[in-house]
Image (tube, rainbow, N blue to C red; front, side, top):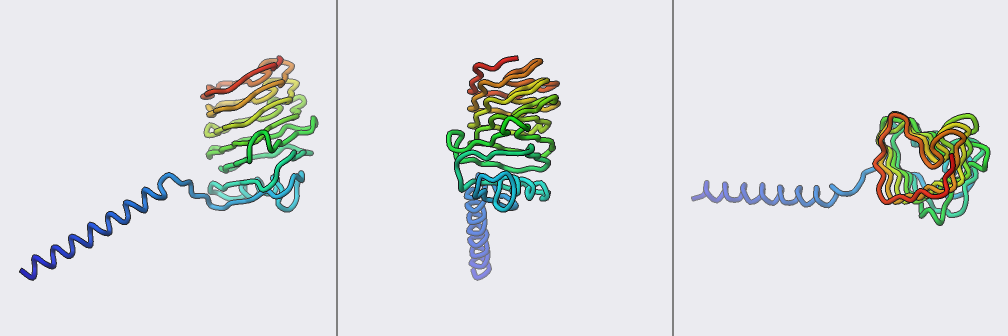
Length: 207
């Protein structure tokens, strides 16, 4: 009788532990876990608490980091922002924050095999000059672009708004408008690429 009671107790403890671990897994399973979180607190081109500083810090980390914003307005660049590692850039909304190439430089250059998620920002006034991709040059197969506006970007070559090369990014709920390229792809140009595009608007792009 005592042995039966002990077995029952052990079984009850094991079940309770299993239920606890299962609940813990369900609670955190849908929540992304980031190696580090950086908060952008100003619209400066570079320096302390700038978007550039946050991206450079995330590039130096082998794991996926999160970049959030405690600022709205326009971040005006003097040179492109280069992404070479996995990260999430979570903006406050495309109507609230723009990253501008100031008609002098490309906005984003993305070249990594890790996942990059960009959401809730406007990518504007990028100029790739004699290169491709005025707003975004992308070679990241795991790029996800969501709820973004890509406008008024130019390229003397291909892909005024966005240029994808050898990759299949996912683009959802984005607006590509008033971008231009001297060759093909005013809004977007895809070289050996098949992006998954859902619920996006392409308007007034010129090539």
